[in-house]
Amino acid sequence: MDCDFLVIGSGIAGLSFALKCAELGTVVVVTKKKDVDTATNLAQGGIAAVLEGNDSVAAHVGDTILSGAGLCDEAVVRLVVESGPDRIAELVAYGVDFVRDQATSSGYSLGREGGHSHRRVAHAYDLTGREIERALLEKVREHSQIHMYEEHVVVDLLLAEGEIEGWKGQNGKMCVGAYVMEGGKVKPYRAKMTVLCTGGAGKVYLYTTNPDIATGDGIAMAFRAGASVQNMEFVQFHPTCLFHPLEKNFLISEAVRGEGGVLVGIDGVPFMGKYDERKDLATRDTVARAIDRELKETGEDCVFLDISHREPEYLKKRFPTIYKKCLSRGIDITKDKIPVVPAAHYVCGGVKTDTLGRSTVPGLLVLGETACTGLHGGNRLASNSLLEAVVFAHRAAKYCTRIWPVLKEEERGPVDAWISGNARKLSEEILINHNWDSIRRLMWNYVGIVRSMERLALARKRMEFICAEIDQHYRKYIVTPNMVELRNISQVAMLIIQSAMQRKESRGLHYLIEYPGKTEQARQTVVRKKNDGLTREIEILEGKNNE
Ligand code: SIN
Image (cartoon, rainbow, N blue to C red; front, side, top):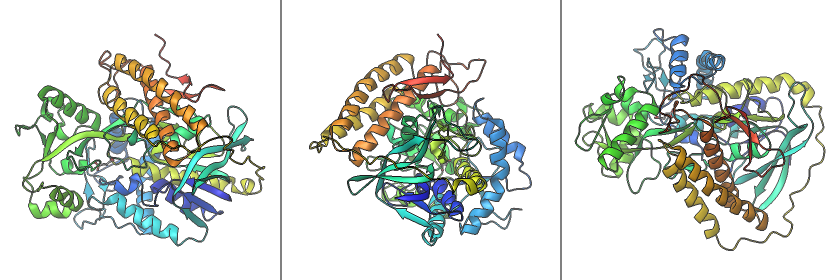
């Protein structure tokens, strides 16, 4: 399979990049499940942008930086925020139907979420992601230059000698596509430009708001290919995931608190006032930690979110999905308190990229949650991620347009076919499932919202053992989609632990019991795979803990 652009992932970042670059050449989009199985599709809240006259770029930049706990790249924050209104207009032109409100100067109904000083979240009620995915997929499906392949699992990136003008790698290697598994067979897909946008890695944790596809594939593959990976210790836990035995990842949007929802204990008493003067609209790191504290102190299984004081008709209209889902579980949000717990939601770290979406491996662009652009710092501000995805997809596409005259003439040499050698068929799926379960529990219990050096060290020791076993299975057995995902979550789990152990302080989403304060100097954690080392051995490029 040869194409000009190979896009891995079918969420907002991948689809908007595909639509733009399809004007240059052929685009192949591969996705490991169905095209709509993306984190974008589950996003409820919306997309933040400065749209109202009483809001300002300075205010949105300031809120993002405050939330990011000293680790945001201010230039990146500014360029993302400034680009917001244009990208929203573009989504509307693609057919996204944001909710309108004649009473606002922008004409949009704007939601509010934690950490935002203004109402600035454009939304489609609590179905924003689904609406964006619908509109983009419709455009993609009708484009003759874009070919979408579902149920295609990417196993690893393809590397070859070479570079792109003005974009050099560390060891003369560049990315020229990927090995893709279709119907049990692995084949090389060659591309002039490869784009990773596989979303996040919530499945590393036992409880998550993410869809099943969120196994950190892009981060793990890029790391194995030698890309630098940044700030992996910053995992955002969403404060309010529905707590119900039959629901595994249903989010109760932060917009519910934005519209007056209050967190209370089992006794009905609000508790956020004890933790932050912004109360229920404090940033997510603060709210998730407060809930964690309440649960530990009271020994209860969950806390509650109460919005029953708002008009029933308003709630049904503003939060149709949440209303229906809760009702199906016997919770009427117009009368009852909603049981909630924090759950892993978003990886603020990821593959380090520049302002054009370029990783440190030439030929490999990385977008969306898979990337670490410098926007989120140590704690992402709510509803900034869809914005980041469209802004960087736009910038990366512009970069491709600029270099296209040269790139399109370049010939890619032959690549090696996938060799299975003496590998056998795995006959016992339990070998996969057991390790999968062990990793997710270990990460939840030892590398969760509140961490300690002792637990991190224990987690690393156990992960060494699990990773060695997974590597062995990977060599011994014929590769399967489950094996690929397990290998990727183990790699990402290890990166989170290794990065967390370098940060002896508490900052943003990373809270360490032994070091409850911030260090004076804010620093990023940047790592890459040790040259010729095992796939879990890292070289620390920035942020080394020297103690
Ligand atoms: C939410 O609706 O609470 C999620 C929004 C986000 O994660 O940005």
